[in-house]
Amino acid sequence: MTDPTFVSDCMHKVLSGGSITFEEAERLLATSEVIELAECANTITRTLNGNTVDVEALINAKSGTCPEDCSFCAQSSFYDTGISKYPLLPTEVLIENAKKAKEAGATSFCLVCAYRDPPEKDFHQICEAITEIRSKVDIAVNVSLGFMTLARARILRELGVKRYNHNLEAAESFFAKICKTHEFADRINTAKIVKQAGLELCSGGIIGMGESNRERLELGFSLASLHPDEVPINILIGREGTPMGGFEPIDPIEAIKTIAVWRFIMPKTILKIAGGREVHLKDKERLALKAGANGIITGGYLTTGGNAPNQDIAMIKEIGLKA
Image 1 (cartoon, rainbow, N blue to C red):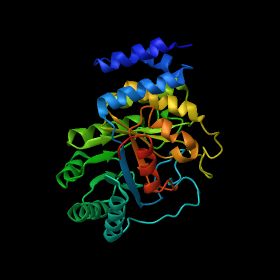
Image 2 (tube, one colour; image 1 turned 135 degrees about the horizontal axis):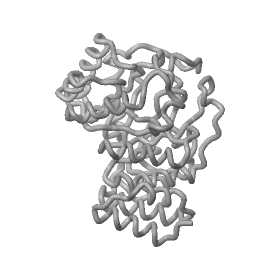
Image 3 (cartoon, rainbow, N blue to C red; image 1 turned 90 degrees about the vertical axis):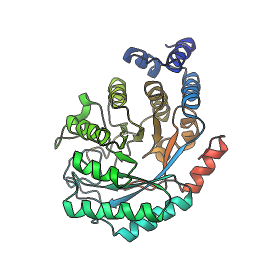
Image 4 (cartoon, rainbow, N blue to C red; image 1 turned 180 degrees about the vertical axis):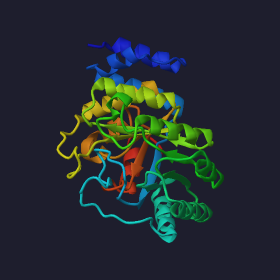
């Protein structure tokens, strides 16, 4: 059992510019002092990042037929999950959705496409859409397009893209259990290319896929080593038709503790509660935003729905934070 003094000592270590060790993180994650852990994570968040919650909306700009076999993903061509599949959406549709996101209160809008890497024609169309959105909508534009070359990343940077998303998904030691068509190193490579090109890096993962606590922390430390600007924390929703369709949901308190400990590991990063939060956290979403998280994705995800933006923004204000 970890006593409250240890949790507080770790908090002061982080606030004074230090870093916790893997062993200290293990003790924090194993603690039964959940409230103390949450309060200390919240103190780190507010001291180093202020009271603002980053609110992002996204659009599934190209759905399904992905050639990768990620076991959690409804968009993989390896599985029959009954989702709606469609090619890259027209630019006008993307612009209209960006406008709706802005009107709803989102500060950023992410174009997400189910590619390994975009074909040249689609990449050109995406670049045109980015240019149009930035000229017509006062909102930060982010993208998630799969694996990336340095040349393409630099083009995106020149077009004014703020942030590129490429999740690590799981710990390196666990990765082969969820994906066979590419390796963990491929994801690390794209993350490094994004940083090299001068784009902000958004890279996170999914918890609740059967990983151990140690593997969950391994993912956190791997992410921290990349110095990401944003880390989305997704909680697995076992989708029927995927190998993880029958997985038992994670205990919401374990999810909260993971978010809190990742705040100790990444004190200045935007930790964004993302896919699965409405399903698994339910009434504990407010606790997550007072236990280390300082960002949300609103309005739905790639193949699942989510809270309406006005509902999320009201929740943020209710707990004394700013959207």
